[in-house]
Length: 454
Image (cartoon, rainbow, N blue to C red; front, side, top):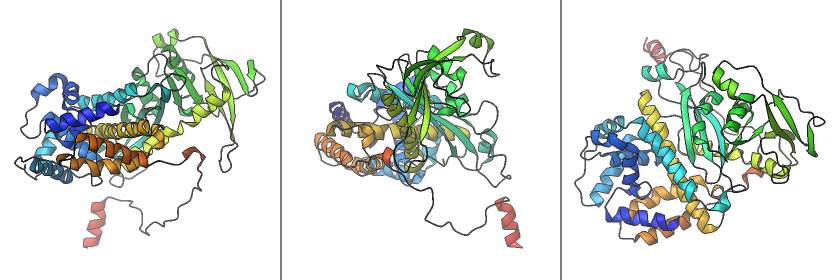
């Protein structure tokens, strides 16, 4: 893995490509464009340069178009090229022309490529595990964004932000995003489980999916099992558990059958008929002995029925690692500042969302390289530390340093920043920093201004 990265850096240096060519090559970008690249017209902002500058904007702490264009000018001057205009209009026009399918394909490509290169010892029982979770993001309050992603119904017009729901499928072994979906926050078929049903094409037979109880419906489990995908999910709180029923496999461990419920409205009759009359599932009760934890016990449901090959303690440990999806979303929304996007039209918002995921995958690649070099797991490396290191190291690629020295120093620096034993940490749910004593906005800004002007 490290050798291939060094080769990519050396090639970027030889071809005098933009800094981000060492992380995602021009060939992979043009492959994602497909036939659409022949429709692209751009002298400075070619398809590859536009994507690279977009990535630099997503990874920047500033996140502005002005900062991204300034980085491009700096690189051109360092290469002895004529500086382009500092006006952001050309870059914004090129970014507007980016097809959504290109940005989406780059997410899939960068996420799956790293997983294929990962060592076998990072897998769970030699199987690929996916963790799924959902969240929300906001965007600028424009008429176009409000029409596509309306604000919460409880907020008055002009007092809230357009809000979108997202669902992301992560690789547990390397932490990359494999697939993602974005939709409305409210309305029919806008829940996390509805969005997840649109992503099941990324799951292959033999995969294991770790999800929370929001996705634990009978039909969802049956659809996953029909694809040959195994599931580890927390049991829904409304389902009763009695370990005296079914076939006993051990203490707090048994095998039960769930009968087929009536057909839900979202499912077609043809699909419903194809599902079995009942599901054979295994229920395991997990007892939490760690001091400070609010949850003391929980019931986990799984299609991994063999108690010898998959002991209860390993099922419990695997479900515990579902928390990595929460941490990965925090890296995206807080560290990469994806919680509030900046584009003013839905098309640009979706592109900005997907490019943040691509940038996240590139940082995950460096974390995996560093973990392999150090002999640890990728989740033990700090995401924010890796991001800070990359932002400092990328500009010196234009200097006289050799690619081998650059790669060695970068990987060693990223590997230095490790995180603690996250699952065992616990903190009180309180805030120390006091909020500013301003009233909440309860009417449009223009109305406030008219009152102030009187």
